[in-house]
Image 1 (tube, rainbow, N blue to C red):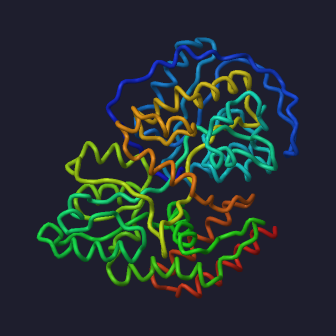
Image 2 (tube, one colour; image 1 turned 30 degrees about the horizontal axis):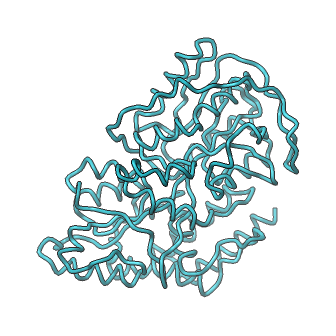
Image 3 (cartoon, rainbow, N blue to C red; image 1 turned 45 degrees about the vertical axis):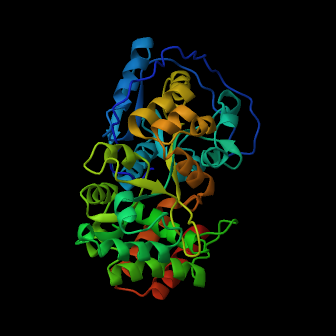
Length: 431
């Protein structure tokens, strides 16, 4: 999700994916009630793959393998900024000019509805992808009005990283399930000599997409919603206020360090690895980084805590779509099959800690032995609540970031921020 700034590069052997059998794809007559019927996927030749800057070093080698197997259908990797908002803006600019420069797009899961509704991406032939083998919440992010407009490439769920060594020394036997338990555990750790100068908790609180994620998680973890099942905003509620109050109050009482209002994913990861945090909310990619740091063997992961019990993660990840204005769409469709296959996504799991869309990989004993966080991650994804799946997502997330940040920095109270946010969201969704 996407909101991540960087990814990890675990040291693992690369799986052989050269044996994938890719078939030529013409137009499909799959039914559905989407914006339009599936496009005619014709034309073979060079294409481009457009995604965030690859800080893991895993994307280009995978593309190189494709290029070696398909010398007449080579893929050029176009890397966009790591910031999700900037990625989205550049993709929109390409679509608005109807440029064929972008072919396969790596979309944050919450962009599918917006891009499909504007007909910037093609509806895909659903029967040609093994969606039944994928986690259902992940597949749903790739659909718009019952039509498939993208294919899951990776998923994501928020995890609570914690210093297991410090909790053990402080006599805390199990990771916290509630915010109150987390604060209590921190208080015990901070009484230890090793806990001197260590802050309690951080997430991503800078004014960018990561704040939308963290705000939404706090609201959902307190029993509230940002938008209801009908898509209508309902954020000016006592439950939502309890969620935002947790963040605001934690900044005031020092549970969250004040500098965390500047944190993106990488800032929090580095603080945790450098021994400055007891708890960190972040994505799975952090695990591989931490395993290669000074805290190797001294940390573990757990589900996010909530107000009265385990919390709810925002659902992250990326889906692969085909630009409506691209050329060589038969090649593009085959390339999506290659990148989203079970073999390829297992490689990305092993090399970059990317959460795979395939259910079976979370239950593989050998993988669990190597990546102990997989059962927790699966639970996080299955319990996750999507960010608002609305067409004007850009306006919605901008409003959330603006009002949540105002509350976190003290320029508005939680009540004032939520009231303003409710009004803004109602205007955006009604357009």
